[in-house]
Image (tube, rainbow, N blue to C red; front, side):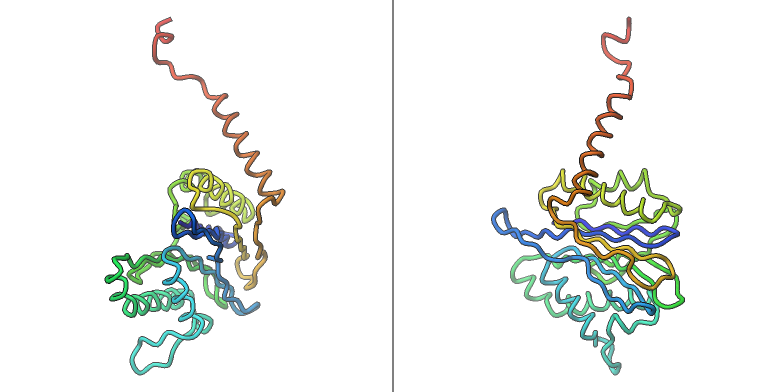
Length: 250
């Protein structure tokens, strides 16, 4: 299981992803799921992946080496795309190409072809954008009314994002909220876990401002987890008890 979230606010983009993968209770490994395709001053691109590990690795290899499913056209790499929309189209084509290659083998093994990706960033003078690409290769784009997208085990972290994230949120407050949503997911699903990779890019800077891995025992993340738990307990105590039951008639 995986949890990845991208938050696009007016100041820039935040992307975080856990690194835990498992193929059964006794086969747990760590693999990077947040991948960077950057050329400082020219482009900053982040790609987070969820789903079958072999599929996501094949898609990433195609994006680096070239997608050649368009007849008569040379292979195209993610690093050469002229816009984020074209980049999202290329990722979708890579997913479909891997699907064509692996479809028969997946059917024989009775496995689902399952992959989803978050693609965010900025190329040149174009807009900073954030997309979610599905297993069919189609995609949707993040908007101002819902300035975040999630893949993987999203249900535990979504209520926090729904309540706290707006397009005008400070960039590092967006990172903080995203980390709280990650902590909530980790507490509710053992399939999501440390280390956590984080990346932050400021709009029009065309370079990464943060590229960091949070390891187990890191003081800030430990403090964030404790403070969030304490804040929830305090909020629970501060809310009046429901006016129902035998006490309500008195």
